[in-house]
Length: 254
Image 1 (tube, rainbow, N blue to C red):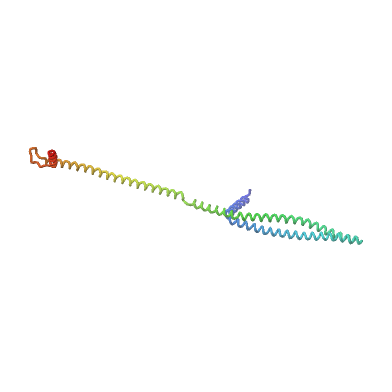
Image 2 (cartoon, helix red, strand yellow; image 1 turned 90 degrees about the horizontal axis):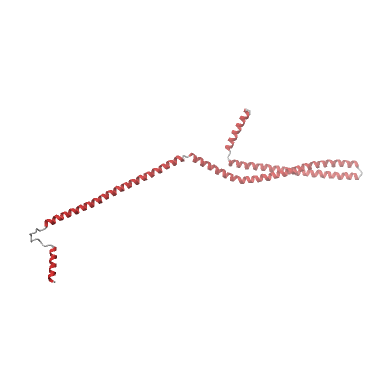
């Protein structure tokens, strides 16, 4: 492969790549419909022109055929009248018109085939355009959806979602740690408070018991100091003595 061919291939490849990247599906679809409609107009014009040519040829063929028939009748008339030369001239004219009619018939048959072909192409193109118009909106919608999805993916790709999520997870873990420390501090503080109250309550019981013992000891000492001596008969009466006296009186009365 020559250098020029290689350079030409590279240039064409680059141009094709640039054109391919520059193509907008929506715009290309619209332009394709416009181009097909323009082709349809041209094809309709071609069909109309072919039909006009066919009709003109048909008219010429019928005219030449009629002329041939006319000269055939004239040749017969001249021959009947005994004018052989005139009959011969009429047959010459008849032959010329017959040849023209035959040529026009061949041309007419070709034009008929051409018109039929153009009509089939016209119907086919109209069907394709109708189908293309139906698909155009669907393809445009799909192209728009694909473009929007591509933009979304590009946007998501440009975002540092991994770093953001990692930071979010770190902060979540930090909040959990703070809550755990707060709960631990509360539990520790509550335990110290319970212990202090328990000590106070225990201390109060001991103090009460100690006070009771002191009262007992104090009462016992006072009682001992108030007891009469064995030889002392002038000891004051007590309530027990009064109750004892009452019992004695009841016995005596009985």
